[in-house]
Length: 227
Ligand SMILES: *[C@@H]1O[C@H](CO)[C@@H](O)[C@H](O)[C@H]1NC(C)=O
Ligand SMILES: *[C@@H]1O[C@H](CO)[C@@H](O)[C@H](O)[C@H]1NC(C)=O
Ligand SMILES: *[C@@H]1O[C@H](CO)[C@@H](O)[C@H](O)[C@H]1NC(C)=O
Ligand SMILES: *[C@@H]1O[C@H](CO)[C@@H](O)[C@H](O)[C@H]1NC(C)=O
Ligand SMILES: *[C@@H]1O[C@H](CO)[C@@H](O)[C@H](O)[C@H]1NC(C)=O
Image (cartoon, rainbow, N blue to C red; front, side, top):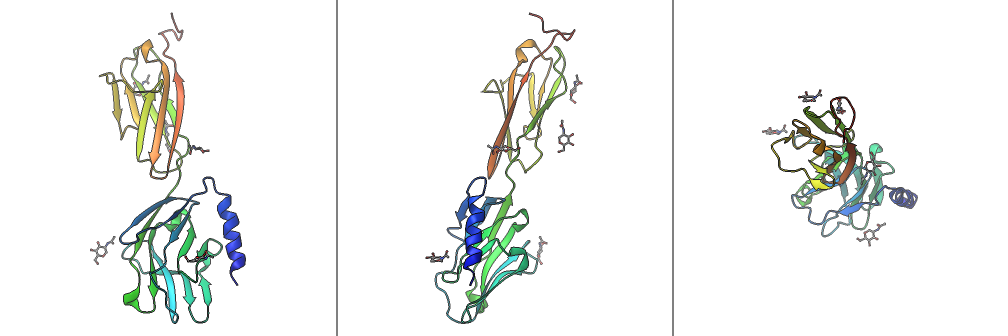
């Protein structure tokens, strides 16, 4: 009955930027991190029942009350998918696993709940992150002798770490170079011609990385690059 839905899921998954798909291996107290648009498979239990109901539940935070993602009447083989999950979940009626194509708002806790509450699964924590967009590298001066503030700005996604390079090499250890704000900002004090070069900022989070580089040319006082 739901095979049309499964067909649709398969088509959607193929169109992803990186055909990402992960299976939660050991759900006991696990935290799973995946990118928006990717697919995760929350595993079914060791054995399934032949009567009663089973559902996958979701809650955003520990203290929230749980909402249903899918509800399955085992004997009737009747599957209800709740409206906000239509077209992006696949419940496997023989293993009771749940496949979910992720949106940002899916971050939270999931568990398999059986009619016999004590037979229900543990809560699995799922984090959903946006892949990082290309950062913008910006500076406020290119004048000899000035203090240059160089900023690596990100428009989409939450960054875990920033890494600067100059001409492909790590930023020189030098008292004129100062990194701050988790390395997002680089200050160059008393700029000299030798500070000219290609500066790149690489950003990373748990699901992606991205990078931008830009050429800085330090100019003399009159705006002319003297030999
Ligand atoms: C959840 O509830 C417990 C006890 O009722 C409380 O100590 C805790 O701060 C609450 N957590 C959140 C995130 O609200
Ligand atoms: C459901 O799970 C079973 C057992 O893991 C697997 O063999 C089967 O291919 C799955 N069905 C679908 C439609 O994914
Ligand atoms: C970097 O971000 C751009 C969008 O700003 C994206 O098109 C590109 O695929 C990203 N690069 C990587 C390596 O993810
Ligand atoms: C660039 O920004 C830094 C830090 O805000 C500041 O100290 C410096 O004077 C600025 N440089 C110019 C040329 O405006
Ligand atoms: C960096 O981005 C923030 C918002 O994302 C913006 O307010 C700020 O002006 C940007 N800074 C630079 C130097 O582009």
